[in-house]
Length: 541
Image (cartoon, rainbow, N blue to C red; front, side):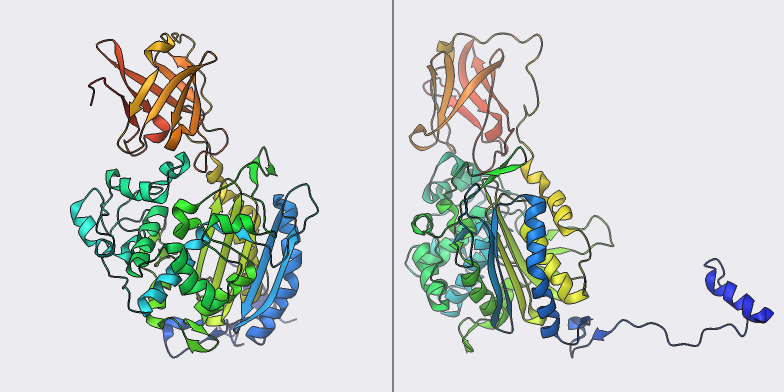
């Protein structure tokens, strides 16, 4: 080797050398990243690693069962079902695990799951069909169809449209009305009392609201002069052939091949609860199978066609599946922005391709997710019967990684689990607290016993039973908590329901006027400042 050749070799290996000597320049063509260009530059994307989309999908489908088995083993989720669609066909569907932990009753592709918030996208598709029929538009003010409905701001009441409610931009707080649902109130009661909820800025704040979506869907159903459950049947389920799908909880219970929900307790999934989501059915109350959802995904991917014929106006559906509101502001200028349409999440894949998705979850025991990549005419849906652990999102991400890049880019199960872990964080001001060492005893029970009223939550009855104070809330007083002495007129209680993960603990504080108890504040129910009940007949405001 000549002295010059040796020196060129050293230069090639040294990252600190910025300028090569004359005669050492590498003249070979640079490595290239193939890009699939389109007439519209906004649709350009990184090319697939396989020779065709079909080949890439086939390879990913072949790997899918192994990915699913690994995810179930890592997470402990009892069972799930998956379907993949491509070019208008269902190219894969199967079930894994069991419908109920501790049994050998296996999941299959026909097993019916509660799909939680994936319901929002189905409801939006049904509304898009109602718009196609001329019943409403995304810009129809809700009060035109629901003249008795109101929010706390008269301007918002008059102007908020079906699209505003479906894109979470009315100003209703995240979870507004969910607390009433936990107490057992029905849809009518909850909608009638949303006017007491404080509002954030109209059309400039994004707050994820189940009952916002529900209000928008109810307006569309009113325009059709039928209950929402019948409307979605006629607009969506029946025309598409989604014969196992329903927006009624009773229909789910009537299914013999249905998955039991499982809540995560001390690291193990157990079937402890039921979840009746009828009050928020348009937002979270649909039950379905992966085969039915595959048929629906093909309609969305085909711009609203059924068997090649237009069923939903493409522009109306595109309005729903493209961004309307920023749903996730990046923490830095290197991160991508998350967007929400009308009942659909929209985003951009690492490859540059747009994607459409939604996830659903019940803390009481369900986790679901679908993801569509329209430019590939590709979609995947995963339904599970375990509380949210990031499993459906991880499986969908792994599959789409294999299609687009030829390998799984990261440990999606671990990463999604970490991102979703906050769902299980106990809530309440007394979580992991102990009573003060110098706590004072409570007054006699007779000081606290009585009926308390609240314009939002309704009546609350405090009674003494077997030496314990109990508070009964909700319709017919069916939501009962024990008030444990904490410090003087402050007691502790354990809330229950979808919005109270295991370990939740909160305070209940009685207030006095002139020495007599006149009110009770339940801190768990006071997030929006609505959680104070007044003792009937006390004269307190």
